[in-house]
Length: 526
Ligand code: NAP
Image (cartoon, rainbow, N blue to C red):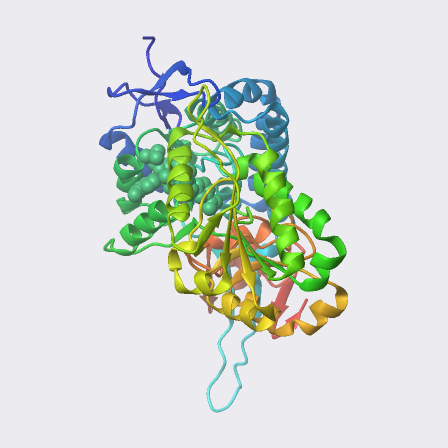
């Protein structure tokens, strides 16, 4: 075995601490021949200490300096796209176009945050001028703006090896806020993590930033990951993955002597409500669209529609049959790693075993050459059964759909009221039906971060107004989004300056507004 690759610790690399692991190609079962050594406790500590040392320098960077850094990473990521195609397809089984697409999304996100911080108004600057002669007491000069929270730990997602990993949205938004980042690599795509990690390390050096701006740690979540989250220098965590993993990190962070926020995106079944005229007018078209949405990326998107509610009756039966046929005809494909495939198999078999559940196709258990292939699965249940058995509303991560037959709108509303928090909730219906469904919209607004009309939920646009978040268990903090420019708010906190003379204020809060940003001055937008 050649020397294993090791963690990135600021400007240096870690040591080979034993127990090296390698990735496995989920499409072929081949063990890839590069090994990676987990970070030792001392290395994890070192990464956190370096991050703390870098904190004040990063917090003092101007928007244009942060923009330059983010653009350097974006250019670097684009530059290694061919290398990423080769490594990431082997580590994940994802097809080449997906790797290219996700590379573009990743560099695009970095540039989006560069634009945001270069413009500068994101800091939400607020100025209340002093009124010295106010009665009965004088009003002091008070100004506030958002400042970086400090070192952030980021856990790479298995299902987005680029866009939610080393230089993905969590990292980009934390850097944009002015925070150092320590990334915990995902065990399933360590080579992809290293290729991107080297790009970030090089950008730190070329921009003259302190080495602790970025580290990348290999190792298990329960060892290295938890050690990192316990470290007193860490001030926030970004995570995308399982409910059990996210919850464990959330509980750990809350039990620290100094609790810190964990922004965990975890589990969502993304319900779709099919109103009667949608089924009557375009049932077949919706079944085809749903097939595409439910099987895209072998169902491994957090916005995958897992539960579909429809009216019972003839049209509902036809929809069930059409959809089950289409899903049954879809080809099996490899999931991202054997753990995810095991969890999918367990989810499908556990759902099949529930009373009052009808399996509409036989998805078998042929796991293919790499032992990771999955076949789409469709189940049906009556709404009354759905409401009486909590297990039916649990996420099955993968290409599985549960069709739930309802007795009219009242029962749909009852199901909606009983849903857990979701990333998305979707309604298909005619204009008139949707106008009459205000109760349903009002309930879904309390349940999900993004509501959709007559569109499928997979495919998350990266933009200013997107919300990729939702009440628990969709995320650990339903007030946040992990996609779009508002993701920066997770890693910033408001700081107020009272009685500071103009020359001692940050540029964003000075009287002559040297950065020309939008501000709230004495209650008026300016
Ligand atoms: P995962 O098992 O939650 O792992 C994600 C990351 O968290 C990994 O780095 C993992 O470390 C770490 N981790 C897991 N449990 C932990 C714990 N108790 N304490 C500390 N760290 C922990 O997620 P996954 O590997 O991506 O996929 C497994 C399942 O997660 C899927 O079957 C699916 O149910 C769910 N998932 C959901 C979404 C979503 O967007 N909703 C996305 C991806 C996955 P290791 O390296 O040690 O594994």
